[in-house]
Length: 277
Image (cartoon, rainbow, N blue to C red):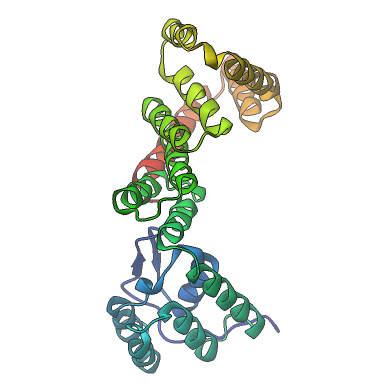
């Protein structure tokens, strides 16, 4: 029982909603876990009056709330929050909190635009594509950094998010803008791939014939797609569809299984678009 952790405070009846990740927190330990694992998504603005009120009123940790309230408007508020959590809540070891503080300090030396991009990148990696796109678009509307490579990276990731939501026309536009800002082969090929999925086959071939410079890259795309087609038989999804075909042949619960699969896919897509899972 050496790994037992005694919880602090009360379990909240009203959770704290973290909009950056679209999740609810119900305890101080969940807050510790979230901050520790998502510090790259956060900045000093995370430490605000709403957070201190929730800690004081919902978790009944009034002293901790008062202490956080004193540091929330100062510079380095996020790092100071970590120090308070380290002192008051025994959720992570001293070494783990110290490592987190080093990461926060490293992030603080990055430009504001780059930190915002890292936060959006985290949302994209978490499959919260719609939320990530909102973040990327917001950065582009207010960007002060003139680094073309950074701007290209934002447009490229916008293209990735759009493609994940099957918005292939938009994805192609984003990848093209990425390439225009920074001539990267990956962005160019992703643009061609998005166009291949967005356009009818004859229109795609027409596009290729009108843009002779695409020849080698389009061949590379076809080679990669062929590799994917050949490897499809080894994928878990392919095995699942084979099992469905067998159910249909045997008169089993084919339609019920197909309905469940369809519902799962619909649920996943709604999560991508709304960022609400």
